[in-house]
Length: 512
Ligand code: C2E
Ligand code: CA
Ligand code: CA
Image (tube, rainbow, N blue to C red; front, side, top):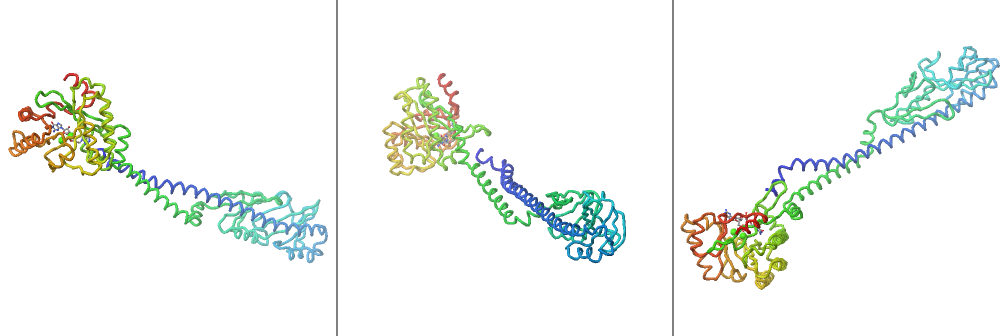
């Protein structure tokens, strides 16, 4: 049935939606946090590079001061200047390890080795000023940065020890990979000098050039640094995301359960006008002429097809939706039948099934008034069928309602009579006009002596109480003949006509 078939069939889809609701906030949050982490790492990488530039500029500034101070000494005898001037600069200037004097491209005087002429090629220096070496004859395999300051044929070299450079690369950032590049040589954190350009970092790769000296610095982080950063920096936000995901999952699950609940589905169907009336003819017991109809509700479900009322009426009663559903049914009935009222015999019975709950609602009176007003006066007789299976409580509202209904000329029938426990007092209190004998008794005609006995008692009782009697569920000629012989006023059953949609009924009505 449509109200429960939804469950197992769609469970996988529901689980999928719930899963999506869990994963979406977590995924989206993770993407945002990832972008945030990338931004933070880029900023950190840039700051690291800027700090490195500041440090290297400072070292080179010291070399520059030393070189400029020594420039006037170039050309003088090495032994004379070495002890005082050259060594003084080495001692006074931080980072400067050695100084050399160069005259006409001959490196002729060194603070370390004294008078030791070696040729010098200015083109080996980037912009004629800077050279990164992986060692010299005194300290091979140890990085050196040589600063050259020249004027005409005079030049001074001031050398910075690789130890200071490597130290700076390591200490400025513990995590970032920093490299110093001079021309086509670069220095890594491990103190080694390589030829070419350093490979760009996997994450947040930045490259900055000094504005004072011809060198640059590159910075960045190794593969996987973004996730590592997120894990270390956002643990609280991660927990919040998981919490949000779980919350969204619970909400999605609840909403889906609610939307799949019977009352929600019935409300949807009511709005979509899926509840339609079927009409079953009721004939006179004596002439077998069509004397009325019973309106039976059907649910034209978009997927399940035509649904029988006993499968959804209990849910409709429970949720209270039976009231608007019955109102809609009455509206559709009058719209379908009012234009054909001339084909009815006078006092044509129209039976509508009403639940006990409905009888607590005075609106029912207005609905009946409106229904009767749609037909010419005296043309139809509205019969409300109340099942004996659930008895109506005699509250002030129900008593007021039934008195007003009687005044309006609405008839009351007790449906499924014989299956419940209505008393004589009950029949009187609610001004009952008809008893509808339950189908089970009719089905026993010709089979069960006891049922036949009950049937005869009901017929006799109705005669004494001056109540009209309707027998339903008549399927055979034997049942028909027996009940007609008993003087039953109205007969209803497949033998005379099955419940049918309004168009079919209207067509059949013209033939009768
Ligand atoms: P009910 O009021 O006793 O209606 C008679 C039921 O017997 C209908 O079943 C009808 O189709 C069926 N019937 C008629 N003639 C024969 C026959 O010769 N043989 C057999 N085997 N069955 C026959 P249906 O339409 O399935 O309705 C079932 C029940 O659902 C109704 O029993 C009624 O209690 C309830 N119902 C139907 N429409 C409405 C409605 O609009 N409002 C309310 N509250 N209940 C409704
Ligand atoms: Ca009925
Ligand atoms: Ca019945």
